[in-house]
Picture 1 (tube, rainbow, N blue to C red):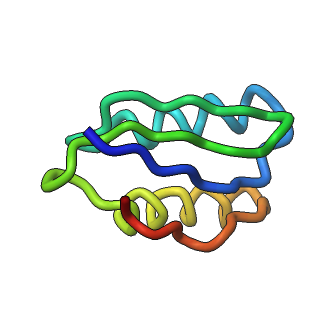
Picture 2: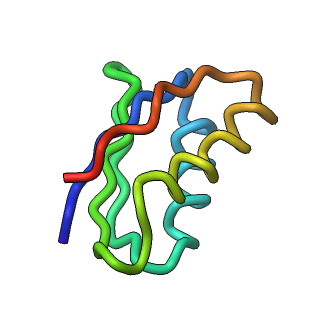
Picture 3: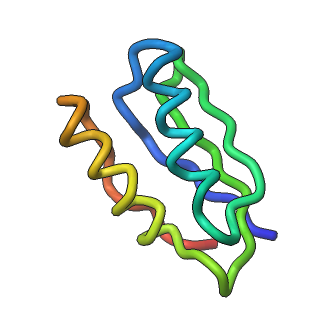
Amino acid sequence: MATVVFTAGMTCEGCSGAITKILKKMDGVEEVKCDLEKKEVEVTYEKGKVTAKDMHEKMQKWATAAGKELGECPEEA
């Protein structure tokens, strides 16, 4: 398992819930933890099934639709 942390402009439980739902639908994503204060999304995933880039692309669709900011795609561990 690997872990990656994204920076996302979440402002409420609706935001974090949407991100969690989007990411958990992806094959290989094991756990999603959202921190509203830090505006961070920590994802535990199975390498080889999903990449940070794949997850970032899904989150970018949410950010665009919701009018929220999304940080750069982090490097894979």
